[in-house]
Length: 436
View 1: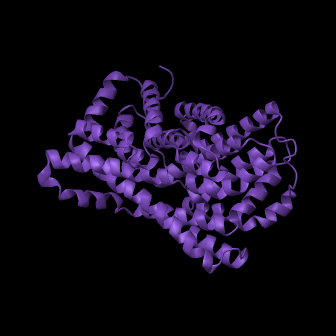
View 2: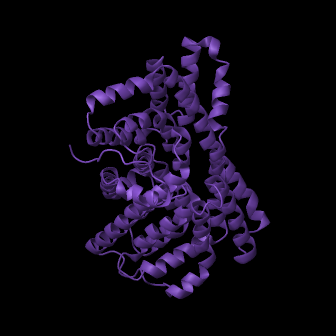
View 3: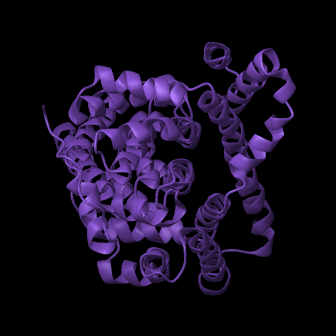
């Protein structure tokens, strides 16, 4: 059955069938051929896959991100970020990275970040003389921080799939998120100086205090959300609802840029995005159920244990495999299918499941900015109004920068776990991970 499932799924990908239908169709065909009498279990397993309370956070975080975009919160965050870093050469690309870092602390979605921030900054970058393809590449890469800096929808999915604390995953993502954001800002600064771009990026820049005052309510949002989670006031799922109500209050009553007429398009866009993710989760849940019954996780775990005999080699092999998988399979589906398989193997090597979750999320997030199925690329190309092939030349350096950060995150566990250990009662540390 396992071979049939894999071949059918890959054929679906090859013929450009949607990810969810490819996964679900492969699972249904496998059951029809090998276990036809158990087909009645398919709807049950699909429902079970989405019948989990933490998953309720996904549609609410998506809705909160869309409300922030429509209610003027995104624009104020851009103005504030520009007031901080926009005064230097290359300050506008740095503004893009910094704004995405702040926006990511609420939205949880890289695609939402791409549209919300890209709609403002991509035209501004082009107006300041940056190549259109560079602006799109920068926006797509910066928006990846939406799934690394908490709250993060892929982290929620990993926590549910691998039965790992979502709160611990959130706080473990802060260090890696800051690392990637900081390295990206340094890279674009040096790159712009080398290219001679952005000498007039400071035009129209507001004073810091003035921009901070205008963005005060927007900046308070991540403080309330993350502070509430880590302070034990509400769970990550409840925080997503708080984010929605906060965005509504700020948009309607304070900024007054959100009207009743805007709600229907915002709700429609949020429902469509949420339905797509939930449909993928449901089909991936059925697929994961079947491969688990077929003994694939145990067989793969045993094979990896025999071939990769140290934590360092295991992590290198997994990173290489995830990078390729992320290029072809949507991040949410990959996490749901692979997390239950790989986490027990990682535990065998003494790797903390929270650390492994961060590695997996950061790695698969690169699939959002790598062809052929990078959703961030499609979103950024839509905003910039260019074709996918035009973006590749400027995209490659950004991918290499993220890969370098991934290696640091992989082999320096303290970057992810130190803050977690300060906040939560951490278990005893496993064996050290380093070159062996």
